[in-house]
Length: 73
Image (cartoon, rainbow, N blue to C red; front, side, top):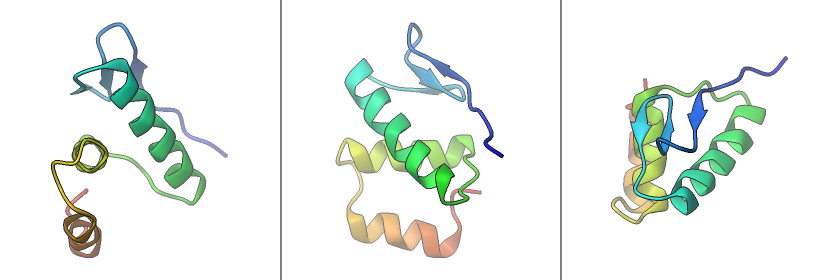
């Protein structure tokens, strides 16, 4: 069973998390979809972390640290 998440392409938001442009939103949505297929349940904080990784604001090492600490909850 798949859960859906709120994506608003006009307002450039996913679950209320704001994106700077449609390309970043879609890249993040694709990453979320892949992770959700593996059982990830997104939260707004988790979406922010993935967005920040996609745009290069955080490194892969920081992303792994957040995942280990479950900072996305």
